[in-house]
Length: 260
Image (cartoon, rainbow, N blue to C red; front, top):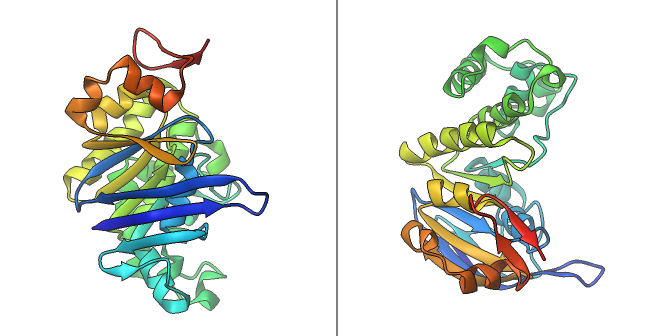
């Protein structure tokens, strides 16, 4: 279980990215965070695994205080939390297999990893991870030869190398077309159905309505909406504008958001 209590993040330039945010994520949930760019979604996810240090508040993961952890304790916590990035964060000149293997660095001696010397069981795990997301045949291709959807599947396989209990996905489909977006989210959905907790940030309501078990909405760093899948499918215009602004307009398909 993930517990976020009164989380606040103020950057050095004075920007308050998160303002007293509190929520919980039960084991096995698929929680989606929605809101405009700049609403605090990415900062929230990065605070959870301490890529960004919170200014105030507390994050507890499976009984461990993430905000107080340091050194080896923090490294062990991070092993349990995989991360998928908006822009893939792959080493573009490396092969798919080598990118996937980097997900195991937290378990490997740095001296061996530096020279790409991973034990056979780690390479077996990489093959399994690639097969789970349908990229086993691409193992020796360079990352910069792949499509956006293929690159994001490499990102998922890399996260799986940690054998995580939870995956944080920061706008994982924003750079993809609608068909590829569904493909990536279906991979995350399958992992969720296998018991993995998913915490994902998204823009598009039609994807949220299709994949989320529960939703929170952020606006200017504050939680302004909480709802179940059923409740977000019945979202009123007032609730929508409370998240996205008074000038926001829902397009007919529900996929887009525009300003007047």
